[in-house]
Length: 155
Image 1 (cartoon, rainbow, N blue to C red):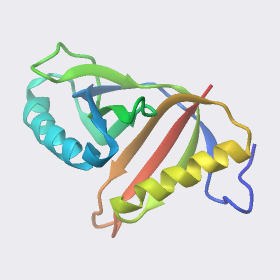
Image 2: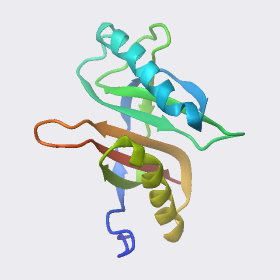
Image 3: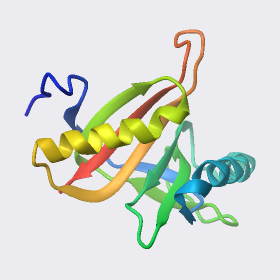
Image 4: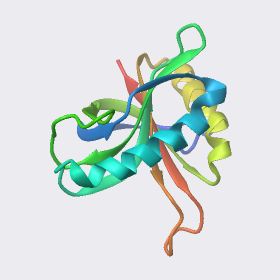
């Protein structure tokens, strides 16, 4: 299946399952940014002591809200599983077919990016599995602004 001219940057990819270190949380939409920042701070303090091997990019896995509350897992991709340490537990990003969009720009564009990706999925009559995640790449010498890869797992 290919992207349409209305949504030229959306596509379907096959992604591999990736091991992660996360701190699970359940929050309302308006509390997501501050909760993520707080949990990432805690995570950064614990990850070096996990013995989880080389660490990859940060991400947030989330599921559609129930009664206005999102289950989410802010975390970091790791190389191997590990024993829980405090609030930090081993988890994984799912593998399989996923709709994908790469958002370039500030994080305040995420709600519009997700709305557009999910609209594209609906237009393509794709069935969603309920797991969604975003992988972050902060600006550096090669990239002048943040890049966020959005994924919606397909059923």
